[in-house]
Each structure stands twice: as structure tokens, then as C-alpha cells.
Image 1 (cartoon, rainbow, N blue to C red):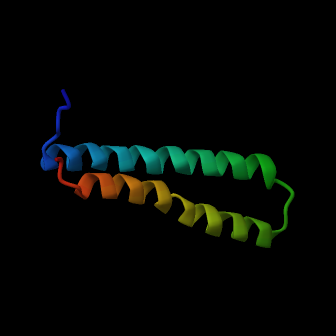
Image 2 (image 1 turned 90 degrees about the vertical axis):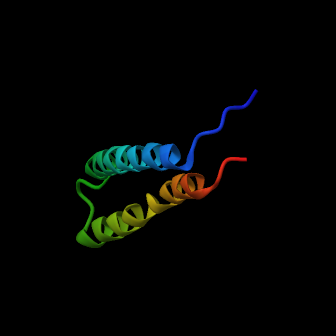
Length: 72
């Protein structure tokens, strides 16, 4: 038997997942940057942070899509 979550519960769970995603993603992105870009020029830092600053949207959109769908 499959249990379904009410939409309000899915939105609350999704909100917590997004907050956790952003915190963990930011920590990992900064750790990777400090480990790999220590002696890189300024434009490498800029490109890395521009790319990594937008990349978190992909998993967040998956969570938002899950949050907004009604359970069958």
C-alpha cells in the first residue's frame, strides 16, 4: 500500500530540503574552490563561482517540482 503526503506536508518537507541543499552545496562549493583554485587567476575564480552559483538550481527545481505535484 502506498501512502500519500498532503500537499502542505510536501511543501514543508521540500522547504527544509532546499535549505539543507543550499547550505551543504555552498560548503562543498567553497571547499572545492579552496582546494583547487588556490593559485588560479581571478577569472578562474569568477568563472567557477558563476557556474557553481547557478548549478544548485537544478536539484532545487527537482525538489520544487516534487513539492508542487498533487499526490494521486
